[in-house]
Amino acid sequence: MSEQQTPQPEVWMRGPVPGVPPLLQPVAHALLQAREEVARYMDGFDDAFLWMKPGGRASVGFHLQHITGVVDRLFTYALGNPLSERQFENLRAEGQEAQHIRSVDLVHAFSEQVDAAVAQLQATDETSLTDARYLGRKRIPTTLIGLLFHAAEHTQRHVGQLLVTVKLIPFVKQ
Image (cartoon, rainbow, N blue to C red; front, side, top):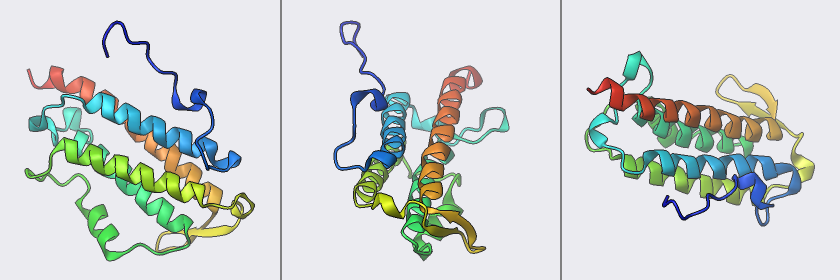
């Protein structure tokens, strides 16, 4: 950002996301904020360090794959659907070093997943938010709003971890 540009306020301070029910605005705001932060943190990132694990912690590649996967999986459960074989394959691949994967592609995949999530939020009836839903093969009981809130919260947590990892890499690679 140039010195002359005024930073935008956080997403939640910009007003409602069009078409998203009022009770789901915090979920949309958190996911859209995460997308902006990921794009900012990853701007100019050197892919040579995508799989580096500073201090034995998770790699940037893992965090990028994981936030995309979490939103995909939890929003699938929110629809009342089981995971597909493709989703299980993606889950197993999270954090597995793959030289052909570029960070820009992972950032793009997350952005697309956020678009899909916001579209799903727009189609969600607020009266169904306390409807029973189930998590995973063990069918852990929860609610629709529980899944949607956790998707947003978990994503934000990993975005914070991503920032720390991106900031540590210059010190570790020296």
